[in-house]
Length: 154
Image 1 (cartoon, rainbow, N blue to C red):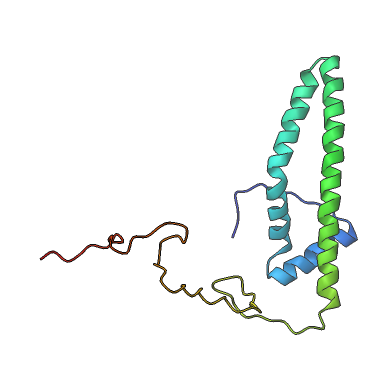
Image 2 (image 1 turned 180 degrees about the vertical axis):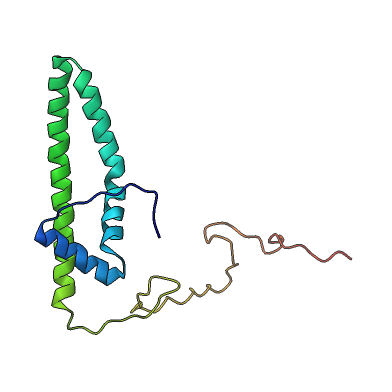
């Protein structure tokens, strides 16, 4: 079906094409839809970059040098964050590739933590002879005086 959206022809590196081809096959999608989704996901960042570059083009030399140092700092932070994300993905790939010698436990836990406790819950303490439930042991109790219970009205 024809589209009214603009079209772009792009030449890719062989390894980039291969990765997009494999991803498209795994997801049952076209290469074009994979590339379009990727570009759509970075479009907001590109729009901010364009806005900064447009502002910088009309700024004074002093402002430009300040922007340059800020941009270099942001770039360093982003490279560090991206590197950590890539490292985490590599660890996940290694774990998935290595497989597990333990048998998987797909048991669904719907309440609690799913951890079995090895100790039994303690039994309730027994009351001492002559003690009254709900009254502290140090308080003096007069057996003739009611304990807060209502007597039947008669």
